[in-house]
Image (tube, rainbow, N blue to C red):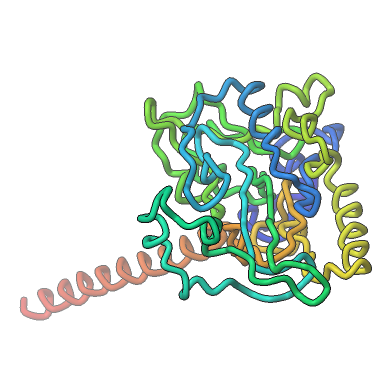
Amino acid sequence: MTSLIGRNLLAGAEPDPAGDAGHGPDHPPRVGFFTDTSVCIGCKACEVACKEWNAIPEDGLELTGMSYDNTQGLGADTWRHVAFIEQGKPLGRAQAGVDHSTVDVFALAARGSGTPPAEAAVTPTTPGPPSPDGRTELRWLMASDVCKHCTHAACLDVCPTGALFRTEYGTVVVQEDVCNGCGYCVPACPYGVIDQRKDDGRVWKCTLCYDRLGAGGEPACAKACPTDSIQFGPLDELRERAAARVEQLHAGGVTDARLYGESPDDGVGGDGAFFLLLDEPEVYGLPPAPVVTTRDLPSMWRHAGAAAATVLGGIAAVFAAHGALRKGLR
């Protein structure tokens, strides 16, 4: 553990978050997730394994109508979420978006089962005619999202009860029996991950299977993933593995491949759960440049203190001038 004196623990370089949280020098190495979305097949085995192991309530089985997605996003009852993004471009191309302006989806929906067979598959992301080489302009991007277990975790910083804590593995865990349901952590998360359960108000999120780690196991989602899209291990090793994977994809012509959340120099000090993406972060519903929301608290308090001192000084000067005036009148 490095010296804490004079450091801003809310932002900046943080080589040992577990050590700085009070865990001794012999604590285990920091662990995390590397999610390689290029090999995700959207099977949702991770979602099922997460729910089964952690006894998470069901979160609704209603499809969004825009994709094969019945959970829609992370929440108190969804600690793993597999996103399905349909795009009108093949793997490896750099086309930005899909123009939906020429498709009247409401008119198509109104036809119901009476839609002519030739038009039955027309959707906003329906591919156009094949290219000369026989390829259609369609791809699915699938990605299993999860809590990022940030190096600088604003949710932990703002928790007034200590319900959120940093484990010896560098992960961030909620103690549900300590949480008082204040909800301060919900807007503090730059990723919108942490959420309150409606029936009791307490917050819930991924624990990176803290109980399994303590027994020498790996998280349930990584254990269940059939393609190794979700990889678990020491964070430093995962970052090296991820960098090599990006180089491999670039060499194969997938030039859109990039890492997200792996850099210790980003706005949250690097994520404990980072990703290999095949498009811009916004396509996956991720913020392009997340920043820990408590980063500026020290300077805000300094400015508030200076302002308070100025006001008190002004009041003291008024009283002093008033006293001197009264003495002069006598």
